[in-house]
Amino acid sequence: MCGIIGRVGEGNALETLITGLENLEYRGYDSAGVAVKNGTGINVEKRSGKVSELKRSITDEPLQGAIGIGHTRWSTHGPPTDENAHPHTDHTEDVAVVHNGIIENYTELKSELAESGHEFSSDTDTEVIPHLIQHHLDCGLDNESAFRRAVDELEGSYAVAAMIADERVLYAARRGSPLVVGMEDDEYFLASDVPAFLEYTDTVVYLEDGDVAIVDETGVEFTDLEGNPVERHPETIEWDPEQAGKGEYEHFMLKEIHEQPTALAQAIEGRIEPELGRIDLTDFEPGTFDDVDCVQFVACGTSYHAALYGSVLLNQAGVRSRALLANEYSISAPPVDENTLVVAVTQSGETADTLSALREASDAGAQTVTVTNVVGSTAAREADETLLIRAGPEIGVAATKTFSSQAVMLVLLGQRIAQDVRGETGADPEALLSDLETMPDRVEEVLATTTAEELAATYEGSRAYFFIGRGLGFPVALEGALKFKEITYEHAEGFASGELKHGPLALVTPDTPVFAVFTGEEDEKTLKNAAEAQTRGAPVIAICPPDHQAALVADAHLEIPDVDSDLAGLLANVQLQLLAYYAADRLDRAIDKPRNLAKSVTVE
Ligand code: M6R
Image 1 (cartoon, rainbow, N blue to C red):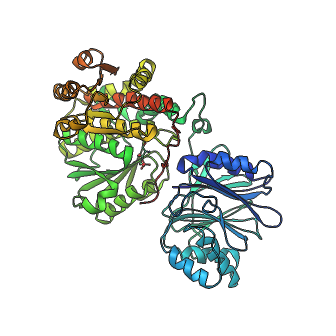
Image 2: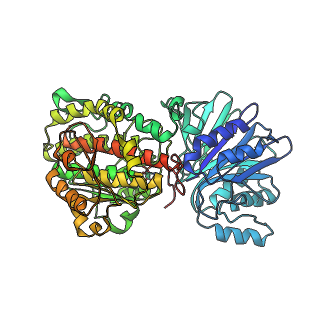
Image 3: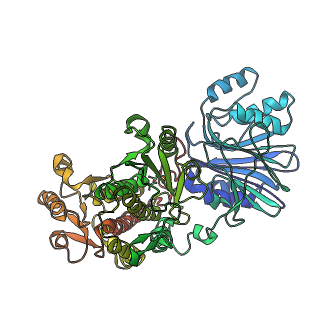
């Protein structure tokens, strides 16, 4: 949930650390700090607030040194104060540590250390780590052994990077939280995620759980916690550094909304042959899912909405399927066995709730697949198979292009599963795949002609915003509401259209616009539900093709091209993304880093 950066090489580390933190700020942005080793010791500068505030505070007195660590925080233990910001040091200030995750036994460790004279200055769980390292140094262990011993005593999840004043070495370890090493000639990096150092190198090694990395300017050594060497192979990241920048756009979110045509083209490239009605998912040859008798999707947030989309499609194709909130999975999951396929849908591949559901399903004997955007992510490594959505880096905390790419990949995966399980897909594959091939152009059309900005102005200041849809329109309505609330901070809710009359209608007034998504599935019923809201005075905004009946009766409409009903919702979703974006922009919200949120939620 936080961002870690570390750098060792020639010259000054500070600039690289700050750039790394700026690139990682989507992971947390309530405090930030850096520690740099100079000739005599370790200098730390840390602040509550964003990286920009940290940057301002260090311009007068730059921290000099070739090796350093940095951190941008999303608070778990202790409020976002200067004291609680990372890096944390021990009382001698000879050990500095940054950490992502939760140390579950920190209270016990803290009281043991306090009894032996260690004084603490923050409320964080992290602060026990530098003290523990120092304690083992005091007991006579060398730096490397002291680090290992300390890490071995931690319970919970962590990605940790540490620096000790008397040597030019970074120590790192991971269990349950992501950590990646970047390598470039005589410069090495450590980070929670690749965008941190993508402009310097595209050669990376993802640490596995239980790995320790010892990094200096001559290279990296990977071992297990006992110190036995482990072999880890470098991978090349195909993301272009420019993709990770904002370019001409004011916000990452707007840029990423506009990248959807490219993202979708990348997602389907080489994976479909529309003229033959054929899907070529290389890891999922025909017959892969012959023995599957039901599918469970597990995911959170926007990815859950994509999962719901996939599940509706599979059910419509006659395959038993459920989309389950990963954070509820351990309590309410239907039983699984070796004929159950559990599909984890996660952009980052690091969401703790989703990982925990995936592990539980895997332990119970289910077959597992991860649908993700991040090569080498934990979910990708832990599932039996991975399907990459190839959306490119997504920096805005609000997921946009990854939702579209996930949903499209679930259309394809769903077709493959249905073909294997039932011998047919229940759809006309040639028509569907032809429409799919045109999706990048269709999205382009929506982006070029949208009137979402005007509508955002028209309905600004409303008391609440409701989104309704049926079938595949339902997950789109939920996603429209999530996006809207997430970045505008306004009250927004999504409902199944037919559910409106069972309670939510009591909330409907002339001051609550209702955005109705029409996907071509029982649209006449959705139209009736929208009319019920309209009768109570609510303005109804139809998201539908131009000549659709709903466009004639609604108070306003957002136009989408007429496509297969399996795909129409995805175009409607682009309109709702734009609506949320422009509404939030009018309110001058922190669109890319909405309050209290972080891109990747690595705590349960
Ligand atoms: O990385 P994941 O796809 O697993 O993330 C899941 C959710 O945390 C994420 O989709 C979240 O809901 C987004 N901020 C929504 O825009």
